[in-house]
Length: 407
Image (tube, rainbow, N blue to C red):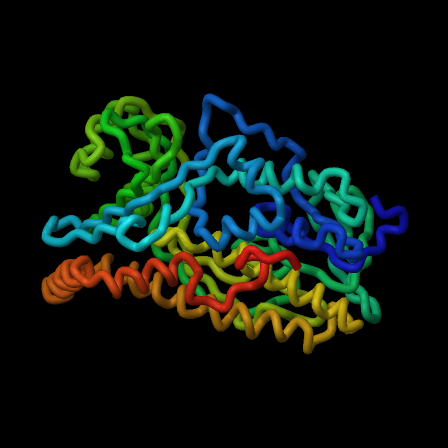
């Protein structure tokens, strides 16, 4: 711990995105504090999966490899997926993506969020220039000259040149600074759990678009699948509160028994879904990353990948500024980060939101066009190649870490 509580950078939020940024700043010469409300419990129970998982793209994998934390994740639990089957409720059209057809060894990995966080936190242990402050909430924020003063729940006051908000979609820092957002509730809730199915998942992600929202089976180890069932608020709560036998029946019916009978079910939880995009990613001596700047529907599994790329890009911009002897909190420096990431994030945010709206409608003409479009897409390999390349980050202006290069 810095004895004077003075830092170059204070990162608020020690989840996947905040911890990735901290790892990227290791050995940078910048004194950093990572403030996280949760305690220091990184236990990954062998017999029980985390309810929250992320679909990690190849670009995000390269970030973790560049930060030397990927092997720690592999040693715990990662699940590659090589194919995707997407179909709609009418059954008239289906989209099949196969990594082999696209010349790729796989499409990505499904990884439990706590596995990712545990590996990142392990990578921060014993690092001289990073102080990890667990179990702390930020209580008060003040600006003094060129520095921010942040009071923590234990009474300590941290002083810093640059504040980074990595504290999620309900960001405390964003609210304190009254950074304006454009957003709305989807009036949908995601139910999450994990199940064991009678048939193997075949290292394949299965997703069906129902009239009430998308249902996804994401492959885990040992024949288990993570379930993300996005549906109307009341129905999600009803599904959460059903007894296991009834829920298994509902889930099997909703998935058209693609993976056979549901043999076992883990705990169930729900969380509301929102779209959110801030008008600005930066303020005076402040930068926002991840869900603090943008939140999207989980149907495409891209939210966390955008956030990880934010972290990699911000680290690159800050280290470049340091090498050029520029102030890391200067507006021209922070604007470079904002321009870079808004240009890449906005098209994905808009595309996923429009995709969700297209599949949410049951108007006959639009439903027919949707079905016809999916059928045509499945027969056009070059278009499928473009979609996969974009989803994997190949067509974006990727930071060095996402290209597998050291900073």
